[in-house]
Amino acid sequence: MSASTGKGEDRGGEGGPQAGGLTTGEVARRLGVAPTTVRTWDRRYGLGPEAHTGGRHRRWTAGDVARLERMCAWTATGLPPAEAARLALSGEPVSAAPRRRTSEGAPQSPPRGRSRAGSGLRLGDVRQECRGIARAALRLDAATLDELLLAAIAEHGLVAAWTEVIVPTLQAVGRKWETSGEKYVEVEHFLSWHVSGALRRTAPTTVADRPGATTVLACVPGENHTLPLEVLSAALTERGVPVRMFGGALPVESLVAAVRRTGPAAVGLWAQSRTTASRPLAQHVAGMEWGVRGARRRPVVLTLGPGWAGQTVAGLARPAGLAEAVATLEPLIAR
Image (tube, rainbow, N blue to C red):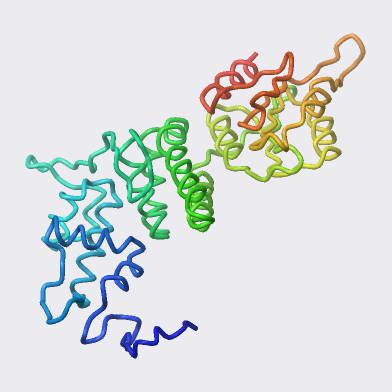
């Protein structure tokens, strides 16, 4: 159910524009963009209504809206707005976006350079793909978002895709949320869920345990931000490292039991917030021992995540990011 606008406007069947058409505000809500964006596309690229009516307010027909939907879909691939507008006006099907052709007929991917733009998000100097992913997330466009995330992972590899494409976009969405009075929370959750899904779809086969070679990954008690650990788990598995992933907010007793049962070579403890990072817990896990007398072993403990900033634990590694964590763990397991 939806509340009436109180203006006596009939939306028409199937939620489409009626004979009189939609207002710019209604079109913007349908597309998931700001009304100023729709007006800018009209003014700069000629994407406005084809039929002009009297009065101050312009009306958008079904054909007009379809053209704007093509514009949104093309920009979601990472194309610059001017190029996307040209294709939207030409009517070229968006299904051609992933593999366009050069004049020689060779398949060519959309531009993948750097970009400073991004649909109202302060992305900064980032890869071109960030813009398309951000726009798809803001529109809550599940199909396009999945396609772009999978393409980024396939093209750049898991570590680079996470570091250079996914993280900057997540951070931009987070900043948008923080500065918008609790708006855009749904966008952050939506994007995180689809990143997690893309990781599961591209994850390599689980590596079988090898005595003394397993890595245990868990969030500290009270911490539910599992996504960075999911990426680390997938990256280690790609490299043949056995991983046991325990996800979010693992209680202390359960963490201790998991370490004792697996006898891991390494334990990664993720803390997103300083309020959840626990130096005594990290020290306790680092001090755990198992094995026969004279040959007892302890795990190497990595304190992972921004929550450990300012809480350095003597003798424990604190990698600065995904690539450094992988570089720390891979030779350790091989040894």
